[in-house]
Length: 184
Image (cartoon, rainbow, N blue to C red; front, side, top):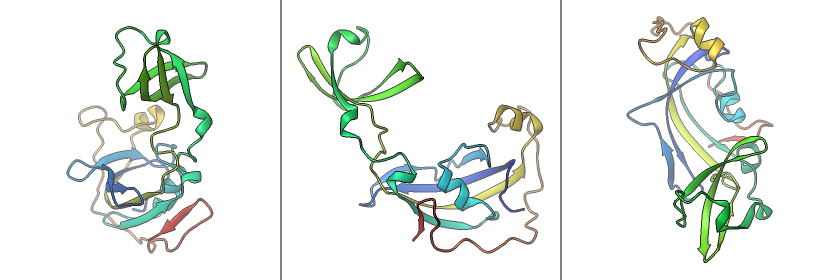
């Protein structure tokens, strides 16, 4: 069964930056998502389309196709009084707040007296993202999972598919594409 819309995909991957520093890894615990519902970065989801269980992958996503370039105008200084007293204002802490369009995460860059410098950019903005991993078990998503747009944990609408069927899997994709994905 190839990866396509409404397939639950289990991945194991390592995400590194340009210097090889590990940003995230799912090794030993895996990660599941429903394909075709926008639960991954679009270039990663497009790259995985058509791969089969057991396939390995390596790709690079350029900043513009991932979380965008780092915007220096998104680094601002605000009065300390804008933060609730219980918020821990320490350099490097991520803080969550509500903006006009919903939840916003920001990083505390500096605390200087009554002023706090924050970065509103996504923490991965400006980074080339290098993914390497393996496609694990694939199964058809349950109707309730599709309705909710997420994988339900075991015991909650669990549907066990025959993950041993591989069918006629197409070859793994080669090279890059117009989505900013470059194979390594």
